[in-house]
Length: 528
Image (cartoon, rainbow, N blue to C red; front, side, top):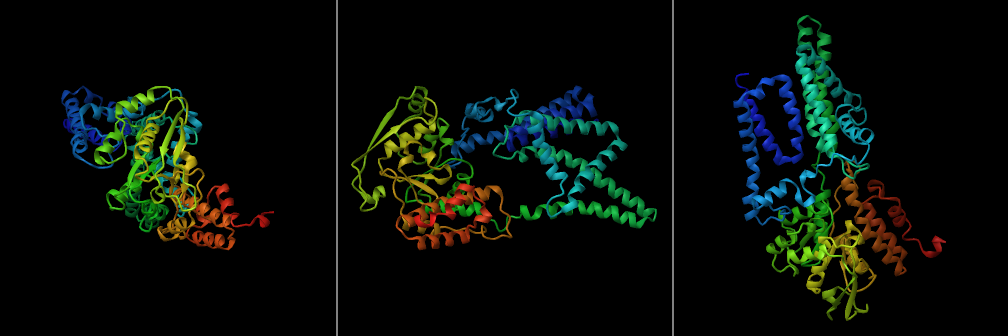
C-alpha cells in the first residue's frame, strides 16, 4: 500500500516501546515479519518502509535510555541493575548478571516439550477461552465459540488473511514455548508471558462477535427477530461472561494481604534493624511500604538474592554510609573466586543485654565462635560474603534479622543462633535461644493486622495464602514456649485467638504445620 511506510514505522515504534515492558516481547517480531511476508511481501522491498521501521524501532528503544539519567540521579531502593552508563545499560539489556545473552537456552529442553511446555500454554489458553468451571458456568465456552466463528468469518472473507493470522498465532505460540523452556513443576505460573498469544487469539474472538452482530442485523431485516435476539444476546453475553467469571477473583478492593504482611513485618522489627529477605513476595511489598508509605525508614532491607550482584552492596552503602560493610567489590570478588577454607569467625559479645537482646538469667558469653562455610560446594556466593562482611563489621551495633520466609536455613551458618520473634529470626549470641513469649505475643496480637483471612467470602489467592502461612511460625514458637512453662490453658487461649484471625481451613498449611499447631497444646500425658 502507498502508505505502508507509516504502518511499518508505527509497528517498529511499538516494538521499541514494548521492550520497556518486557524484553521477551521481542518474540513477537518474527511473527510480525511473517505476517508482512504473507500479506504484503513487497513492503519489505520498499526502502522507505524499511527505513521507517528502523527509525520507529530506534525511537521506541530510545525511551529505555532514560534509565541512564534516572539511575544516575535516583536514590530509589529499586537499583538492582543501576544502568547509569552505556556499558551498564547493555549489561542490563542482556541480563548479564544472570548469565547474559538474554538467557537464551533452546536446547536441551528442561522438560518434555509437548506434555509439559506446550501443555502449559494450552492450559492458559483454555483457562481464558474454554472453561466450564467457575461462576460463569457454560458461558465460559462462549470465547472459544467466538474464536471459531471469527476464524470462519475471516476465512470466508479473505483466505489469505485467515492463513496469515493463523501463521502469526502459531509462530507466536511456538517461539514462546521454545524460548521459555520451562522446567517441570515450575514454582511460578507463566500466564503473564502468554498474554501476547492471548491477545492475538482475542482478535479472532472479536471477529466472531462482529460476525454475530452482522448476522443478527441481517436476520432482523428478514424479520427473524427471535433468532436475531438470540444471536445478539450471545454476543452481549460474551463480555458479560468474562466479567461474571473473573470479577470476584480480580476485585482487589478489600484485599490487604500484601499491605498487611509488609506492614506487620516492618513494625515488628527492632529499631535500626538490618532485615535480610529472600524472594519477591517478602521484599517488594516491604520496600513499597518503607519507600512510599514511610513505614520504618530506620530499617535497611537487603535481599540475599540481589546481594549476589557484584556492585549492588556498594550502591546500598552509597545510600547509607553507616551500613556496617568494609569489603570493596574487588575484595568480595576475590573471596568468591578462591576455594573457601573453613573459617572461624570470633565475635566479641558486649556486656549489654539490651544491645544483644538476651534476657536476664540467660548466660551471656564473652565471645561467640562461628564456623563459616559455603552453603553449597567449595566457593562462597557473593551474598554469603556480604553477609559475612556485615556480621563481622557490625559488632552487634545493629540488630541482624532474617525474614521468616527463608526459614532458619537463610541464616546460613548463623542458623543455630536465630531466635524466632514473629515474622523474623534475630541473630543473638546464644545457641538455640529460647523464645520470648511476651515479645511473640505482642508481635502476633498487638503489632499485627490480618484483614481478610477470616472472611470466607473473600477470595484467597495462592500467594496470599502462602504468605499467610508464614504467621504460623511465630504461633508455633509461642505455643512451644507456653507448653515449656507448663501452661496448656494459656497455650489453648493463644492458639484459639490467632486461629480466629488466621483459620487453618482458609490457609490450608502443609500437613506438618497443621499437625504441629493442632497438637501443640497437648500435655505429655495427653499425648500418651
